[in-house]
Image (tube, rainbow, N blue to C red; front, side, top):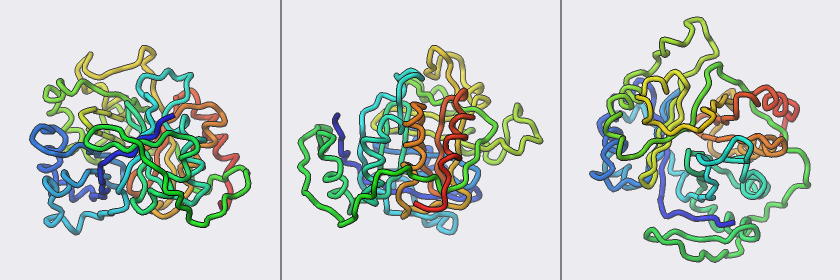
Amino acid sequence: MELHILEHSLKVASIAKEGIQFFTHGLIKLAFLPSKTRCKFFTLTETPEDYTIIVDEEGFKGKLCFEKGAACVRVSVWLRQQLNVVSGGGSSSSSQPIGVTKIAKSVIAPLADHNISVFMLSTYQTDFILVRERDLPLVMHTLSSEFTLLRVVNGEAVAANSLGVTNGFVKPKLVQRPVIHPLSSPSNMFCVTSLDPVTLPSVATILMDIMFYSSGVKESAAPSDDLEYIRFFSFSLIEGYVSLVMDEETQKRFPLNVLFTSASGELWKMVRIGGQPLGFDECGIVAQISESLAAADIPAYYISTFKFDHALVPEENIQSVIGALRTNEGGGQ
């Protein structure tokens, strides 16, 4: 297998719900006017708590001015390098391992074993593992035995040599990794989809309304007394490819035949990880979830945000997923 070390340097920001008004203009440019910007990596994910923005340095410097809404923003320089394992998430059937499940044993677990913290982003097309820049030599050394390492420079992949760097961390014995954070599963169901970038202008008004002007407002089809319904929407524009994660009610707002759908029209249920904000320093959170799913051959997408993590699994598997994860709950790593 090949592992691509991509050239983007990234930053992640948390924007408070009440502060999104300060950044709407710049975010719209990043999302809908890629030909006018030099940004190649942009994601926006809305959760009940905030907006998480991941953007490369070109987009951060050129289109996002955080000075006006500084009180509403937390910015981390933690995300500096990204690894891309080609997994073809959108084209896989539900019977095949996709997303974080496919790379749980080969990538996620080894990094956790070596105490390397990761930030995970599954998209319709592929999977990104984001790591600190300072950890990259150790990441390369850890994964060099399993992968052909390639560094992407100016759009072309060239061989990347491992430097043989270690951090002195002793790999633990092979034992079940306990799940140590609270889990919850919202009532709404989600789809993971995409669209042809050429059609993006035709649905820009719909997307802008969903992304910036529906905050805190439930779709009409959501029961008013449904306390387990949550607001979650994710938009990614990475190297020209669009990826969308939305619940089924939001999906109905789009014209027919605009969004890519699988033949089965597959829907996904969410598992939210964390009772309090998880932070960026704790290692092994993604591994705790992905290893259990991989052991049960359950496909999953995984999206980390500034405060919590989210796994998406086929709706028919949600009860077995919750059961398996809760069986592995423990009080420490």
